[in-house]
Image 1 (cartoon, rainbow, N blue to C red):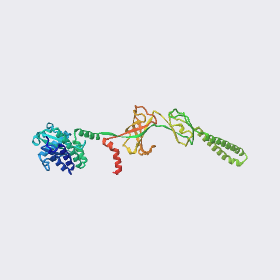
Image 2: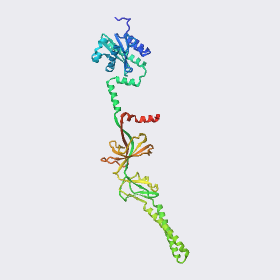
Image 3: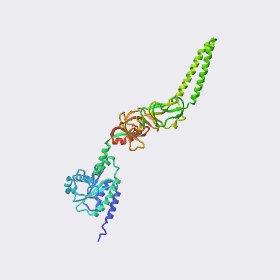
Image 4: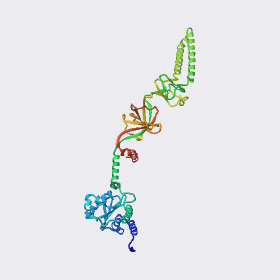
Length: 444
């Protein structure tokens, strides 16, 4: 028959949890853990191990304050430091798995059976551990109750501890276990792993050394004789200007020449008998020559209204409908005649992502609409001055020639070019843009 005056384990558990919540300092909580846990389970020795900093023995049962220089405390610190990494879960301590130096002195400092209880909050890293030791083996119901109590101790300890610094967090992470240490080492090695700096830029394939076809005079384009991308030969008609105004001027010039010629003929006949007519004959001859020059110039302009190709290639322009009926001025660019096998790449390097790119560096073009195709090129020149592009951002013009031995891309093909720079650690490449923004914001 059970003794009605003996407190039940559940009542002892609730009382200890309440005492843990009422503790005002970590030291007061440590006193409760190493001394008053005896209400729930019998033991001979208890030690509270704190993981703050490099780790220390924070409380020992029966002592008001442990001496860190005492042999017992130093041996206990070695044991707890080993168990923190080797035994992350609650359970009995296996003496055979301890290091030789710790196992040899076990019988001198502790009873035969010890229980290790990490003090953690949920799945977080433990803020410490409680070590209980006694002569008899630990029963399963003792272990179940103490696990539940250690969970409450862990919550109370976490609430009382100050916010850990980044150094303490790093040391705690390194002490958490071999797997986490290895992962951190791999991450650190990856941060210093050298990778090549690169930046993306808009790019377009343009003809190399094209022949620019310009308007030969002021006028209106009447018709186009070629289609976009049509192959042409030297002498092939490209486009023609409207001749209505020029033909009217030609007719006026011809009549002006006829009139001046008749006036000159009459002055020449009158010069035989009239001194006045002999004096005007030179003036009439000059006027006749002036009108003849005007007529010749108009005839020359009529001969130039039809523009022809000077070399073989393809006619590069968007659409003839954009030009027919449009007024053009002398020298205005209308189209290009280019060799489809001679192309180069023009890339626009954003000023905000400027890399130290120099002639001879490499870049790769990834054309739009062709995810499995790419073209390698070599930088020929980089503009010293940035300019505003047609998309409205400031960028440097970069010209590059395609590497021989690969298919020639189509003129007008657009895409994204990846320019390659110098080698740098992965951490710098990942933080390069945030650091630049922070520096501009802070002004240092």
